Structure formats: structure tokens, C-alpha cells
Length: 109
Image 1 (cartoon, rainbow, N blue to C red):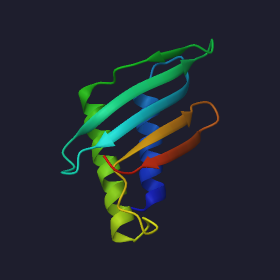
Image 2 (tube, one colour):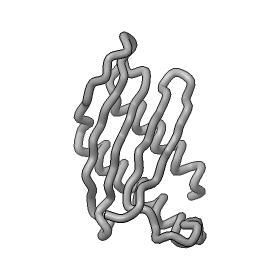
Image 3 (cartoon, rainbow, N blue to C red):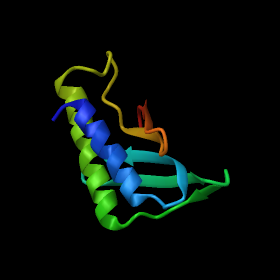
Image 4 (cartoon, helix red, strand yellow):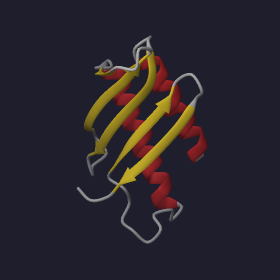
């Protein structure tokens, strides 16, 4: 699976798991080094422009963890770490209406 396919799957998962009135979804993720879970914070901006949090079901969190672990492995296998250690977490921003997807990786832990 390519990195673009993984990004697309993450975006679709967040749209499906997010609140119906979400205009923007923001996820802060820290993936455990073993790849068996992580720490997450799920926020969204609703149609009125208010920032709120949401709690997706455990299946969505498990699926997201699996996708992020695959993405991290893709970076490692393809030497995309730009000389740094492989990332340990990320901040994902998804504009629901326009489908704008952004991911910022974090390093260290």
C-alpha cells in the first residue's frame, strides 16, 4: 500500500468516525514504539465554528492505529525520515468539506 493510499484511508476513517456537523477534524496521535496502540486526542470544529472534542468508537481507534503503524513502516522502509529517527506521532488536520488533508509528524517521545 502506498503512502497516498494510507493517507486516503485515514481521511475516510476520520470522516466516518467524526461528528456529523464537523467542518474540520484534528487528531493528535502518539504511537507506541511497539505499534500496539497509542495516545489520541480527537477534536473538531463544528459548522458554527466552535471547537469541541469527540470520542470515536474503539474500532475506529484500532483501525487508525493500524494505518499509522503502516505509514510509519512505509517511512522506515523507504528511508523517508530525512536523516532523523522515524516519527513517533503526528497531528492530522482534515477539512471535511474540501477534503484538505494535512499531517505534521512529531519526533521523540
